[in-house]
Image 1 (spheres, helix red, strand yellow):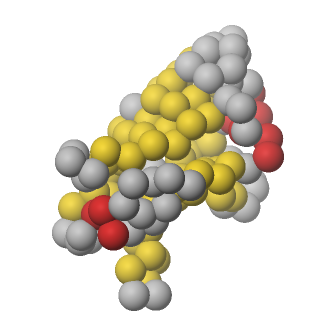
Image 2 (tube, rainbow, N blue to C red):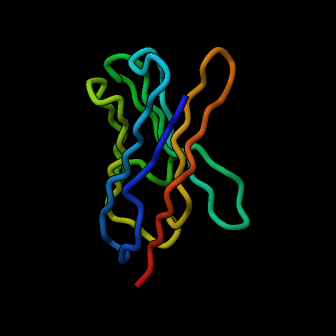
Length: 116
């Protein structure tokens, strides 16, 4: 199982970024997927969730609702996190995650820094 995040970077407050997570080594469409983030000195928190297959259900951390959108492309074995209206509190390392047969798998993360 391999999860590879990309798309992070430095962005000004109010800006936008789209993160990607390319998955391999498992039957992607069968798995729900998640984005987490961890800021320095803080616990890792669940940011967004998308169900398997068609991804018809998504859920979000309250503080990102209306600003972040999670989506998936099963043909590309990839999930995305579109982030807009970013603020300094969104600064963190973002990770994608999936659980297979009770085992959690994580990517290496991609850093998002929101700063003027």
